[in-house]
Image 1: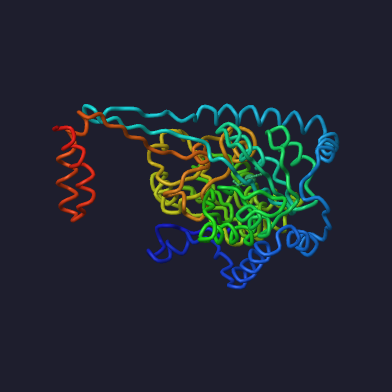
Image 2: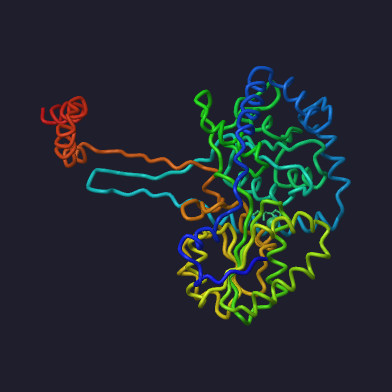
Length: 430
Ligand code: HSO
Ligand code: ZN
């Protein structure tokens, strides 16, 4: 990885050093995705079947997996994988159950009752990418909170042929409706509905740039009122490490993220030039042994090591970057926690590789990328429900509050608003 001395960079060079790899801002993606969406709107299942053949090379007769297909896929999954899924599931469930909403029910003043309540989003669509890495863990990260939140209709879509372990994970996480469709066409189907695929209220899950673009487009489409989990960009990690950290651990963490995709970005911020060089040394040793070394090597090209003057500055740099994952391998990592302003998920200490959060510690791995961590939260139980308020006033309550409301309405020049109060106060006076 390229090593840069932070303090010797000009302000604009520092900004450039924290730049993500440019999102392939190719307008043809938007056009292609728009056309796919319109074909799904027009032709429903027929369009889906056509796209399955065109993009995945498979003719799927029944988009919905049958119980027999689910059972036989589950039977093909090894006991070892099932046990790993069971452990991960238990931890993810525990952590998300603990996030249960605490309702609020208070009197803001005498006779004025205000409540904050929460109800599950009724219908959710969960997208699981296909491709070279079958993301079994993403099934758990989406399906478990959806079930815990109480979402009634939970449908999963994934490009055919769907990996057996994905089907198994979906099955144990309580998903009964698994549709064999991926890409932009899957997102269009979830947003608009087809003869066999139900229209949902909210779409979750990662995907390639076609999927991401489709999510963006349907969430802005006035014909439907579908929402999405969060804006998505390529995955990334930033490691803060001091001189004492183990360079082999650091390199392993950087590579675990680099192997996701050629557009993934990994950053090391350290106060030790010796550490920076040791990590580079380890990167070449470990990279050579990886099956996905081509992908990881590409990702490393747009990745950087920044040598800073001390760990306080390392945190400042990290805050400026706002990483999806932040790994802290310093002497007392927890001490830095209160100074971290932007990170999707934080991994503290030498024994907390990102992989544990990706799979099984219990935290959610759907996280804000591309600098969004400054304002967007990691996926949680709350994303599967909607909060709404309730207010109820007694006659006394309205008498106490009415005059203030009428004054404000009058000054907004909204007489009908004022009248809605006045008419009641008058009736109370009688
Ligand atoms: N690091 C990915 C999640 C993942 N890793 C799934 C392995 N499987 C984005 O947070
Ligand atoms: Zn990962």
